Length: 181
Image 1 (cartoon, one colour):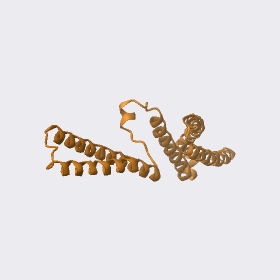
Image 2 (cartoon, one colour; image 1 turned 30 degrees about the vertical axis):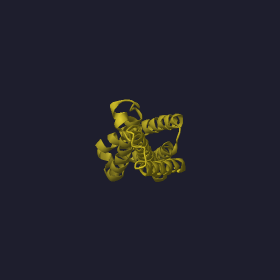
Image 3 (cartoon, one colour; image 1 turned 60 degrees about the vertical axis):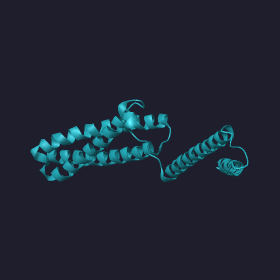
Image 4 (cartoon, one colour; image 1 turned 180 degrees about the vertical axis):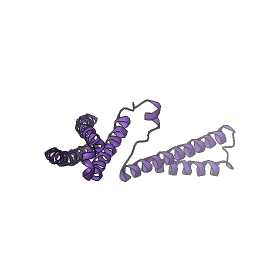
C-alpha cells in the first residue's frame, strides 16, 4: 500500500512538472516566433530543445507507469500528459526542419517569404509603379522613334509639321508623367 501511495505522489509531481515544462516550452515558443533576428531565433530554438529533452524524460517515465497495473487510476491523466508532450515534440520537429532549410536550397527557394499585410501592400504598390514606369518609358521610346522616322523620311515639310508637333506634345506629357511618378 505504501508503494502505491508513493507512486501516486510521484505521478502527481511528474504531472505537475510536465504542465510547468509545457508552459515554459510554450513561452519560449512564443518568444522564438516573435524574434526577428536570426541569432535570437537560434538561441530560443536551443532553449526549446533543452526544454523538450526534459519533457521527453518525463514521457519515458509516464510510459513506464502506463505499462504498470498499479497506475490504472491515473491512466487518463497520464495519457493526456504523454499526448501533450508528443504534440510539442511534433511542433519542435517542424520548427527544427524549417530552420535547417538553407536559403539557396530547392526548398529554401520555393519557400515564400511571409509578409504582413502592410508590407504586402507596399510590395504590390512598388510593383505597380515599376510596371507603369516601364510602360511610359516604352511609349516615350515609340514617340521619339516616330518623330525621328518622320524627320528622316523628308516629310518634315508643311504637311508633316502638325504631326511632329503633336508627337512632341505627347512626348512632353509622357516625360512629365514619368517625373511625377
